[in-house]
Length: 343
Image (cartoon, rainbow, N blue to C red; front, top):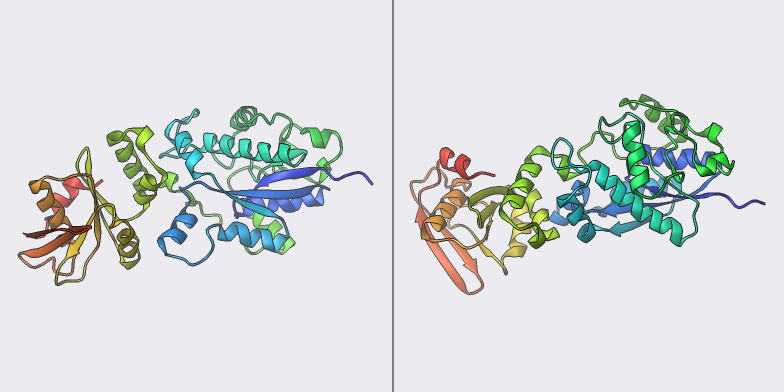
């Protein structure tokens, strides 16, 4: 018997990437997948902060288990950040470097393909589904930049694209591949029902913080005030937690929005000044940078404003770092003061 063509796929846990696996198997290929943790993934972030007890890549794991596809979870966050800071193809509407992200992941998939002697790489991309990164010219540019010309198969739209090497050789039956185009997902949802696929993440977007307007504003603020080479994955991870207020180019305070975020921010108490209001329930806050006395009082007033004592004329706010303690008695900040400093 002839050996089956083997493909390495990118499995997000969404509908399209799951269908790509199923369609390829029907077309005679063997498939295995990779799922990447970039540090900007909303699901992974929620798991780490404590909003869910599920595994970091829950949808990818659930989909892989349902359709019987092996998947390897790969943490690429340290390598991914430099790409986000300097994208070759630029950003989308916010800070999302979608084309560069795709190239990055496809290069990783190409490396795995070469390591395991597979024949091609595949994705769940659909022609025309995204206005910048999934038009024909962009798909070609990404394929070339990833070093996968002739070896990158997009089974959901294959009939609308030039055939790949495995299609030309007959190792993958091109007649069983699809010709889906456009932004609608009615056909994919119908296919999912036919396959009995249920575990996929709902196709509603928002899986990456870099597409979020509020997060992107905070990210731009960090890039503006910090040297990019000094940024760590931890620095950008904190951008997804709490309310952020900038007091100077080198000073910022992060204020928790709920109990989950307060508990998470407490993990940073050993390395940063951390505090809250005395005598009233309220947020935890961490101070990133060094403050003078005036700035300390501004920080204390911000924290006071979000406590249950915000209608009191004066509140005591305590900050600690190791054995050191700072105590301030201040009036809660006004709405105008908050907006002036809010990132």
